[in-house]
Length: 445
Image 1 (cartoon, rainbow, N blue to C red):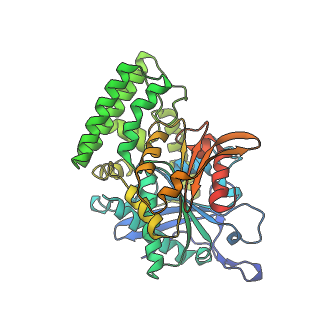
Image 2: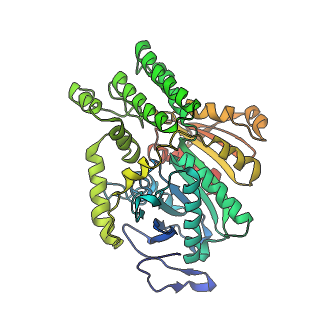
Image 3: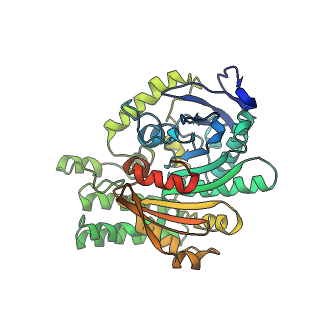
């Protein structure tokens, strides 16, 4: 069943173009938003920004989906206002917004994230497969309300834990298309600083920090010892215990690095004794929640976003569900603790072997939580039909206006992008490199 709130009277564009339900939301440009009941008791929210490009019809430009990480972080909040939407968190216009070039849809996923909500604890997702199937249902509802987008090229972009969710979503959507269950022009999926192989990310922390000089050999030894404990639990498939040990390893990193920022190792942080004691006082669960769902240890910035989403945005979109933005995000993460450390590399491999979907990975060189060396390792270990050709392919520079913004390596349907001067949030940290990646996948940007 599909439920959409606050319809405006649809208008038919000139020259026979399809019906469009554009309306004024929060910020510039025409928008639409609504809920889709992806299952009984599970209600998923999307927010669509129609492109502001000078086009006769919106459908002349592709549709890009953005999925946030966490699990439990909000795409309509973080991705929209912190990374690539038309407005920045402070209300100023964002020069590099993707909406200038394409239609962009932010989805609060899994259910319980952001404005999405569930009617009871039994309706939360507990596996990546459930998340993917919910997203397919979301797309069925979206296309029912926006049939003009069925033939528009669809590109799925994501970040962090999205590196697990997006590949399986793309795979399930592709199979649903093949079965004739949904009409969609799925073209690509691009994984930003992905948590696709969690243990590869964790094992990269100690050597990465040592090489940067952020920890010494003693710090390296302590972080590595904790990471290896995490690896042992993963190998034993003790998934919830592995998640808890992963969080413990984060605590060791914060202590030995004197408070390095997990999302950008060059970001200034408070290294005084008070700040460090405050970090060390957090429980494993509190630390996980702050880093994964709130994306920051900085409570002040989170407060600004909370006030924006709970106030002006909720009012402008007339959200009247009774469940406040972000109220269920913590439980969303907790219910997935048993799935958190499971890899999704085999899903990426299946996409490459069994579908026509173009797949990419882009990674900021200053990211720690999903450090680039970890991504390079799982890609090198992944088995797929084009592996030999990819490994033999040359790596070329990404030059934008004669500035070296990173590197890329492409073979067949797979690409890897190394992004300079960027941490975890590549779209915000290096919009020039991100624009290059967008052009590679969508031909716009």
